[in-house]
Length: 320
Image 1 (cartoon, rainbow, N blue to C red):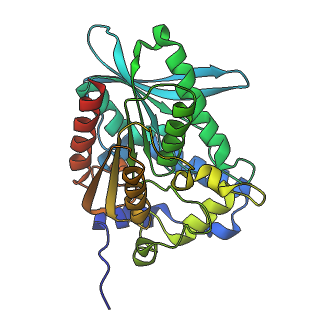
Image 2 (image 1 turned 135 degrees about the vertical axis):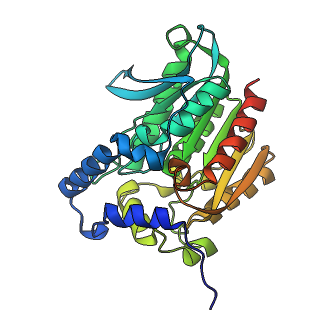
């Protein structure tokens, strides 16, 4: 029997200290309490050892986006220095039901400083027993559309816009790219990191799901819990599964970043194949010895720098 490679010892220790609840029995109140505990940890200065230190060439601040029926927070990363009209990178964090934009300060600040660009990370509604994935998808799209329509406030060039998502955020970014095509909102690029793109009944029908069913950063049990929240009974799983979009042609060029030690690695590979077959330009970068959510842990996963370099190069080329 083949031995399945595991993420680094540091990642395994970090997640063992976090402690995992019994997901299938978690009530909404318990999920919110667990989420709040994780957010306190992610906001601790000490956690930067794992999540990475932001680039000093970028400022980071919380701002608000006012939508017709709600107000959302966004975490904005801007290069320091003289004011200029810059490209926009609309970012969506991973985590699904526990994530926060704070965990992505390392990658987003570096992109803001190095491209340079304004990187707006959406603090979307988190998924729980009363909030399906479709709500978070709406948050990502509505913030993208609102920021692009208010260029003066944000100091961005509406002709140079990209979307960038991680994990569940990749699903939101990919769906935003599809909506943008239908709404004639021009996008230059999309970056999808360890994307989950299938929440239909075929979600588990991938070799990587079997090989990496119990990794520290994502397990099949967590995927089952996520899916039960994301697409409750009566909802259409295909509507939030980019893999099953009717038409994947005419989309912005895509960079798909796949960590090899990831249950959803084959989601990313399959989506890359589908994009190319539809005639959409796509590039695939596989990251060895890295597991799910690796880009949020550069202090523990050195390969995150390889992914950062690939993302920066891709965006710089397409946002020029």
